[in-house]
Length: 228
Image (cartoon, rainbow, N blue to C red; front, side, top):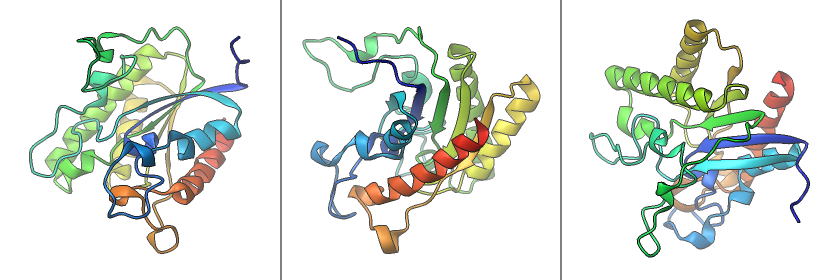
């Protein structure tokens, strides 16, 4: 028997932070293992729980708007949210030759709110290069348009900050330009708390531990209450 619907509904679009990558790891020197990933300890789950909201997480480690995580100068175009957003899910693996990527999401139910948390991996590509940042803003705007096309009535809230806020000013520029161009008033932005390494420490590969997610959730919750 299905559980009752939540009071609200929120979709989170993100990367490894939203997945809960390394949240249970002892320190930053530990590498990824599935046993230390837990989405229920993330800012996303905590925010949904606070509002008694049904939630959906469209989150993939290493994902970005213009580039997935890269250690060089080249763009990583294998980990782009635009390619995954309209799917039920994404995995490099398959079972019996069947791929989850072959299944499209039907968008039958529109969430009240969509929270986009992307830009951390993009910065590994853009760094402070002005031309690359402009490229990021264009790709980020295109992603907003893609998400809006599938969710015409949802509020959209663009956030960044847990593992660096370098591209946050550029996200606000992209959102403001999109709002001006489209007349879409149902989109806002919010900067969330960075990891306080001195007091919180790190999870695997410098990802946030639960205490950092808790602080970020509190900031996001306050913004949601303020806006909606």
